Image: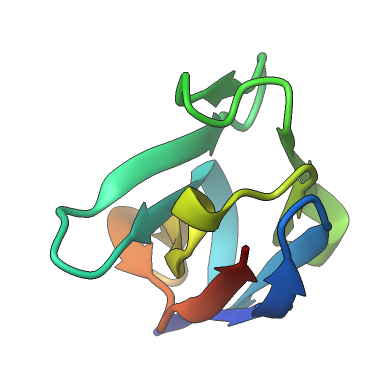
Length: 121
């Protein structure tokens, strides 16, 4: 079994920064893509940033130039650095990963529990 544990959410003023972390733990053979999603009240969950296991990151247009996704494969951890935060960035942020786990080496998609990010204007 694999778990994704997020941290780093909180309350910050508009224009400020936050850094989210998501650590994967369990019987992990390899992690392919690691992504961040968010869901604002009354809205559908949306993709924020994607970090493939190899290759370039991709971002939603709404966060380009402000957010940066990165990962530390040795720690099975993905980060989301969020700068120049706006009130519309307020949401629950979720980590998502495609994990190949031991012992059967099967790939499965996992979600974290979510971390609240609130931006005050």
